[in-house]
Length: 249
Image: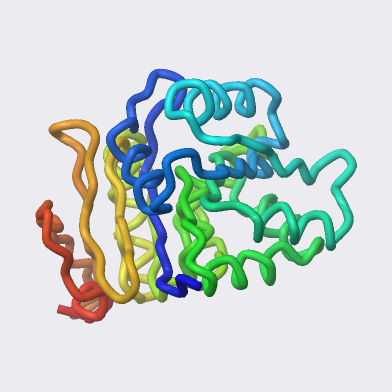
């Protein structure tokens, strides 16, 4: 049994336009299978039907995966059925949307424990935006925008904690730079930010940056003398020890 953890956290991009295709190919490649079982978890979007269709068109028709979906909003399956669906998959892809609402639902239904088991079995864990934040200890989230008609700000949301860092998606695309720097200055921790069409790939205890567009980049943030230090992460084919990324340097 393969027990090396495999996580690909994508900063953003339009799946329906195949903007993240190069990253998606790598996610599929990590399974080591030609027609892997790909499970889509669209909780953050409220199990949006159009999003499910998009995933099936991309990962199913375009890339040739055996696609299935875990719907949890209207009539969630039993814990046993949910567990079986997750643990029989080769890759899990979590869609974007309301991170806070998604994590609340997952914890209520016990999916957090099932995903921890999936991680320990080496099932590929991936996703975009909210679906990237979830693998980290915390994330810089726009969850308040989904339930408020008044002014809102980014909040720090708790994820599954598989990686001890704070993740920020859509870094430049949604101009989250200042909000994320302020979050790191206030609460500390190691911050990892990804632009749209950029991702962090983690295999075992190593990582590297993936990109499906020339200007898509990833960054590291940490607090020094009360200020957030921001540095661009190099894009190299070789892997770098994850411990280096998670140090304040």
